[in-house]
Length: 319
Ligand SMILES: Nc1ncnc2c1ncn2[C@@H]1O[C@H](COP(=O)(O)OP(=O)(O)OP(=O)(O)O)[C@@H](O)[C@H]1O
Ligand SMILES: [Mg+2]
Image 1 (tube, rainbow, N blue to C red):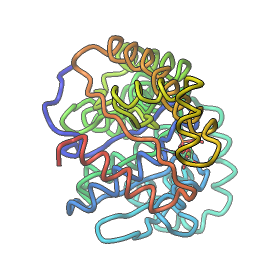
Image 2: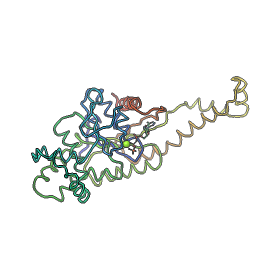
Image 3: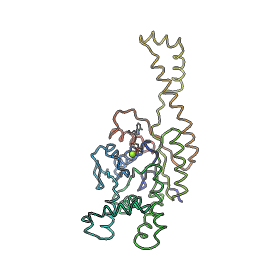
Image 4: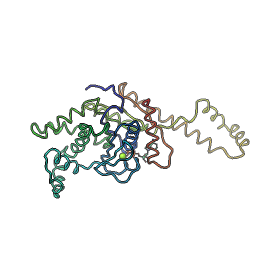
């Protein structure tokens, strides 16, 4: 598989994945936010209908039909049945498909019985938006690690099952689009903790073994800031001695134990993350870009957090 020398936002289709709760939705929205603010017409799509994407971009519930969030930014929620209807309307020229009420029941039956059907309706819809150049960039808030490999491999799986005909002609272009590293990339979000680090390395291994899709970058989210310089740490160490604490307390006229304990905790927490970051860096090798995003100490996590994370990604990418 070829590697791409393009920057993250120069690709056209990005699948953002990672372990549950690490920040996939936040990062997908932030990438979309950043791209749109650079003037790229961008679509962000939530695949697992949890509704968090709507909060992150500050709009009401999302539907299959994209909502314009702000200039150049659109958001939608995947709905595989709608995707099938659209596919039939566009490809089979079945104009009355909207009136096929019971299609839902048949669809559920087929989709649940045949492996890869729901997955290909998801990936196919997004790949179609890219192929038709409806957007400059499509960012997918994709499934978590357990499910994403099957999703991304679904065109190949179906291609292997169906050798000729209409379905085959559909899977061929999708595979071409997904395996072109200049077009499509996976972004794996993680946090500097033990389990997410292991899962990330395992996922990257599986993506390399089981798909031909390029890993565009790994984004480490919730990295604790370095609050104190080395010199300041030494100063706090001295202040934590009984004499130091007593002197400080006399000076400020109030108990200082909690403040000193807090400073100690901040340093320890940050240090405890370092081995995970090192393991990740070593496990990934040199050819995967690693980006770091700060822990946000905000109470609210809507549009404000999205725009802060977008700026942080922009800084990391050198924009
Ligand atoms: N850098 C950050 N600093 C602080 N909090 C964050 C950061 N990134 C995300 N969060 C918060 O962590 C929580 C989980 O984030 P998010 O919903 O983006 O994760 P997710 O991977 O999409 O989760 P799920 O697997 O449930 O879809 C949210 O409350 C979000 O606001
Ligand atoms: Mg999410």
